[in-house]
Figure 1 (spheres, rainbow, N blue to C red):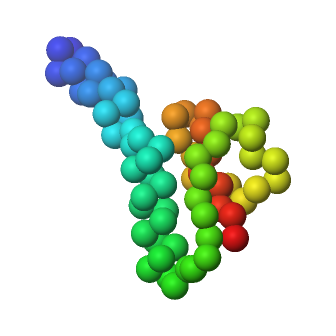
Figure 2 (figure 1 turned 60 degrees about the vertical axis):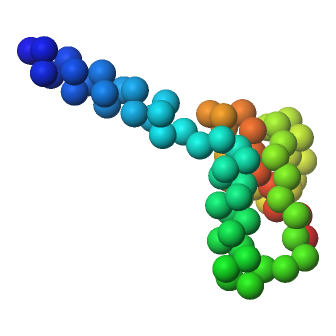
Length: 71
């Protein structure tokens, strides 16, 4: 019983520890775009209300903020 509770607690807590910051995620996305030869673009971290039709390439802070791609 104690083992089951411990496993359940670790399973629930893991996403909180594994969450990346917006800046870290932006860096990873930037590296992927550059690796595919992308040039002349800009990535911004914005709130959900500020997307305004932009291309969303990532989300962070429990989808409260998004990383948008601008050419």
